[in-house]
Image (cartoon, rainbow over all chains, first blue to last red; front, side, top):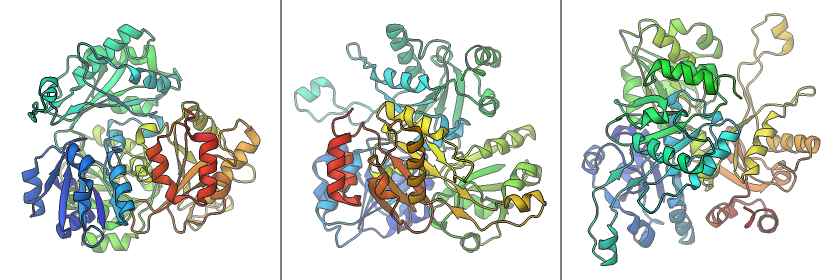
Length: 285
Length: 285
């Protein structure tokens, strides 16, 4: 049996009891470690599980899935995924390959940022499609995310923006020369994301995510030091939410006063918040 | 400290290790049991936790929150919620009340149907806003959900439809007479939901959810007997997915061939699926 086990969001104790039982008895345990990260390292997981874990990078999952699936028709193989196993689509590939080999699969759901973002106090029913924000470079500033946020905004919906992580990335030079030397991991911050959104807005000028748009920055959701900050995108370019992982929610205008009451205490500046809320959000949808 | 602990979706072992530790040491443990249900009963939870659990119905949470929060500034109180603690907005109220009383709060995220629905193989990025479907009556057939599905459909997005549950409901007669006699619990099935969608479509006629629209019925997500069925809404009116809880996803036209490959094996009838897919979905967005 192939088990896809969700690990949740913060640390080793966020695995479910069911998931932990599977990890303890599986013949081999793989950890997918490129679409997201836990806030603790693999050594900590191994200690907690009392057994070794094989870190599976993108290359391994994409090109050596048969190795991962080897004899999984006879023994149990656990494939651990940060968040929920189906939060990223990368793994549907693995399941399809398992099917071809006649291997059964079970998934053990867990918290995903896509629903855990409800901890902001915003209603999950009022979110439109989720978008991703990649690191802009001098020459590459993709703005297709802007169109999707716009679609959400037209109906007053909130947008969850998932921020880029770069793990085991090669520099262009190293890639060109075929050298497997990797850059240090990089995790986008809320401030960087806010800055890029303002940059796109300055270019597109459709009034979707300007300096007065309210957003929530969320850091380390589910961890003891979880942090939420509410402010305009302008304000958020200056916040420091500390260590990864960060996410951002751009507020839609379809808001409920319970949402306002909930998020107000996280405001960078309460007077600004009240002011902007009245001007652009209150009873606007 | 007030702990909001997510229980996940299926049984007592879906709680996280972190959540279980909190439940074991809290002074009082409440179970919120009206926005959703686990697939096991309270006795089973109590046995697993090794301690009593106080079932908190809607009335108790809404009118007796101070009782729940009593001395939570000094001792730990755990408030258990099926799924993720912030999946339903009912509990932001409780947190706001706790804040007023100067009580600190921590939330322990867990799987929510809003992200666990990724187990269908559909990309979570391609979902628009989630809608709820209530039980229609002879005289009350609310169709505001149709407008929201339409907004999603306009952008080719999938829609998760959450199905009504009726727990501890009074009949109109008993309510009028002030008799606290409750009807047996009712859980909407995928077949009932499909039928109601066709009913609304027949009335609205905007081509959003007609007899040839593809949808996925999901039952008992995360449980050993999880079941997925793919078919037209017409076909789904005839499926029996067994025990609760059920959910439904209406497919958008913005589909990926990986999604097709993944869901095809769950088709009620593969020939119909292939046919409809080619006609209405393939390369349509």
